[in-house]
Amino acid sequence: MTARGEPSRLLIAVGGNAIHPGDIRGTPEEQVELAARTGESLLPILMRENQVVITHGNGPVVGKILMRQTLARDRVAPMSLDICVAHSQGGIAYLLMQALENALRRAGSPRHVVCLLTQVEVDPADPAFDAPSKPIGYFYGEAEAEEVRASLGWTMREDAGRGWRQVVPSPEPRHIADISLVHAVIESGAVAIAGGGGGIPVVRAPDGARRGLAAVIDKDLSSALMAKVLGLDALFILTAVPRVSLHFGTPRERPLGRVTAGELRAYQREGHFAAGSMGPKVEAAARFVEETGKLAVIAHLDEAEAAVYGDAGTRVHPGSA
Image 1 (cartoon, rainbow, N blue to C red):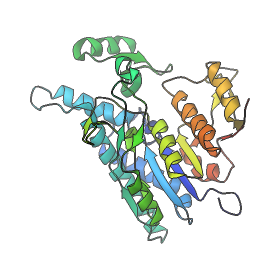
Image 2 (cartoon, rainbow, N blue to C red; image 1 turned 60 degrees about the horizontal axis):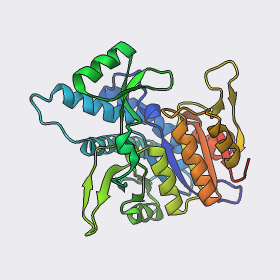
Image 3 (spheres, one colour; image 1 turned 90 degrees about the vertical axis):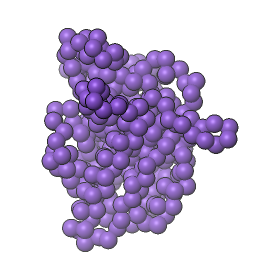
Image 4 (cartoon, one colour; image 1 turned 45 degrees about the vertical axis):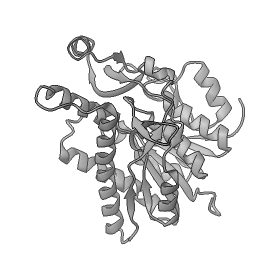
């Protein structure tokens, strides 16, 4: 922490729907523009003397990759889901790296941004493989979702009142592979983009050999684990809403400012946070605070700087309910 209480070693997790909203076509021009906006939002943070890791979601993008290859499956051999995650991780990280460095150069900073393709080990016996729950890809109406399920064999589920989406297994992250490389990058002064899309899901054999599995790990849970292992000061989860809210989307909606991890857990048990949207973010924030005694913040991407300085977002501190 700096003298004014600002975290000097932090992980910033950028939501997939924040950098690739569901209401865009996903053209290269749109993706470049959105990445540039992300770069401008994060620039004031990156201009300071600090150590920064950036992770990002991939739910909308990996779902589109799956759809593209499904439509072309009669002409092009489809890739397994772990390779699709790797494709999304590389593509999104490339756009973010370029946008961040462009913003830094315009501001006169020589700071570098490094992308690390990241594998994350999971348990092959994780019950998630028998109960797909992670929403990815397009939103559909109920009738469209039934057509997709019937024609493609995908598991479809209603997603927090926003429509129907494909769901895939989402096992718990157990180990960030080669985490020492992330540490080396931030120690050098460069910004590290790592763990994109929750990381490429792999299992490791007794001899150390790894192989991929068909799954998408939750980005926020992987981010919390990475921040914990690296011993960072704070976890910032940036998304498309300004704060965590109780009774979200109803006349009784109440945004949360400062809250303890225990209070957040109590609200969680009351069923306030939907599994397909705010649920994983709340879980990740609570875990990080409980396991480290440090700070987690959930805020809007456009308010990144204010969130770091304590002026925006839901701030989760240690403490019981």
